[in-house]
Image (tube, rainbow, N blue to C red):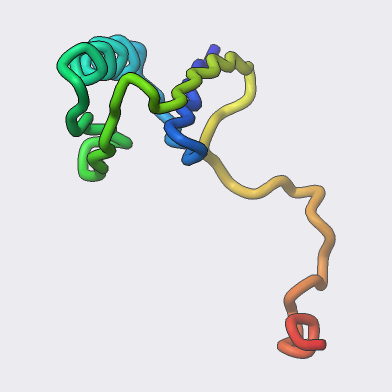
Amino acid sequence: MAIHHDVVIDGTMYCLFEDAGVERMKKDVLDAARSGGGFVTVRRGAASSVEVMVTASTPIRIEHTSSDEPLVGAPPAAWPTGFGSDDADWWF
């Protein structure tokens, strides 16, 4: 079963796929808030991260989702055929 965590910080969503990353982030957020504010690094994978300023008043929500479906994969075979096959499909 795949589990991912959507972390929403001040209206911006970040997806984390490791439980350890979520626990580390919770600790970093609490430390930043208790110290009056600071930057927290959000690691979105092995090669991608972003730093966000967190204070005691920064709204943060963490949503945990589990699914039997793979999180990353090929587009569903049921997608409509032909859409986007002609450049005219993308213009008004």
